[in-house]
Length: 431
Image 1: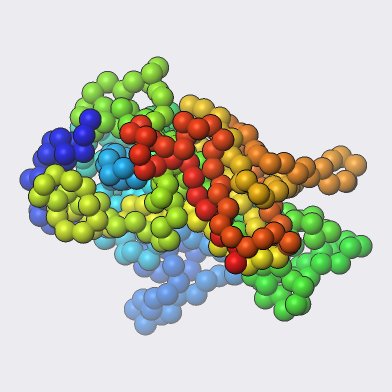
Image 2: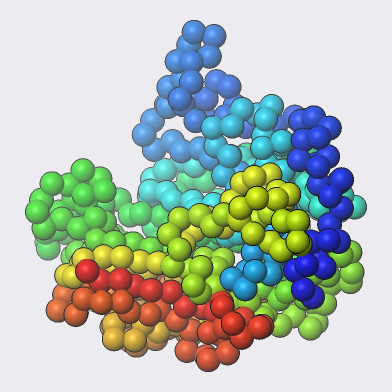
């Protein structure tokens, strides 16, 4: 289905109303965050003459919305999506209006430290392009060992959030590593539509250094000043072997355009025929993967083509693809790739030709045997399926400066359905 027809099919009058023509949307948004006095999930304000105070350094809060929007594939094809977006700092009375058609693909990154107490509020702003839907949403922190099921996000054993409502999840973060989060309501549909995001946890070793017999310094991200200090560690290794200087979280994903078009045009969803034709890294195909920062917000221009300049705004004027996938570092630095596969229909294999990958963890677990010895492995490629995460270290000491490609080994994943721009390719630039 071409993008011209797809955009002409969107009711412009309905979009204008949804984007503010009838005034701001309203609902009861109740964000819970210790020390926050006005419900915007941060501590930057003075309320009635009283300055907000964070109760402790390990208290962290975030406010997400769940809703719909559009993402533009690298060949210019716009796909209808569901997703999440971080609106922390937005007053609660503005949260619904601010979240309309503002969800991102992938969703906003969550980055935490071991020992944090994390309060995550989720507001369901509804799917305004599909007003016939009243889908609830949840946050499922994939791989996290919840003490109780109430905050697990699986609707059969926990709470789901209806349109116009808000729920605050609480997590006591005790295990470092790479995770992901996604909606677990009608999971195959909502995940295929884009309700997926990166999440990782830094270890306490960043702040303490090694506490065993092998010394290693406090990480610079936690104030370390030792000239030999890395930026951080992947795990509490107590030997410094998971030290890194530059990190990058990369989500391996794919869309079936037929599924997204069926959702947009209120057709039966082809679950049994699901076959992804847009492979992506951090929600983009090449060369968009190497465009630093956010891509322009999708708009519908007069000639019906999706652009990033002038025209009818499709996303409330907000960019929806904000995470690039390009990596740049200096020769001699150690690169940490935080990889997670969120595809709902297939395995993927990634390689970085000319670079050696060392797998130091998988599934948010340090690669260490029961005898205490490291069981890291060096490899030229990594293969993993949906729901799996991999911690990959690449040491560039002695590696020639230049541009290296991180890409899928299956040739048909190196382009999209049109065999033009697109595909699961990005660049690692070593200076």
